[in-house]
Picture 1 (cartoon, one colour):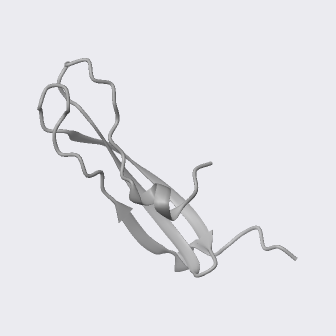
Picture 2 (cartoon, rainbow, N blue to C red; picture 1 turned 180 degrees about the vertical axis):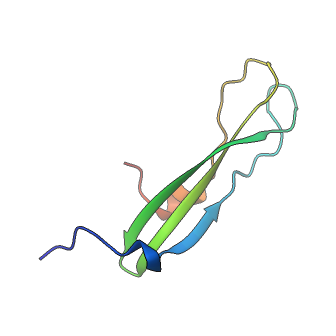
Length: 78
């Protein structure tokens, strides 16, 4: 029988910070725009992965959001 739910109170917190510090287009310091929490169940336990997403505060026209790479390595997208 497959267990479809898991106990989130036992989750290990993993905080993934975006590595970029400055905007590639204008050179301004990036701001933290939001955090994306996600619970993941793996064979070795339950984890809460919190991703930090950054963006450019200046009006330079750069709409790119800077995200951490660790979450892609830890959890498959989807």
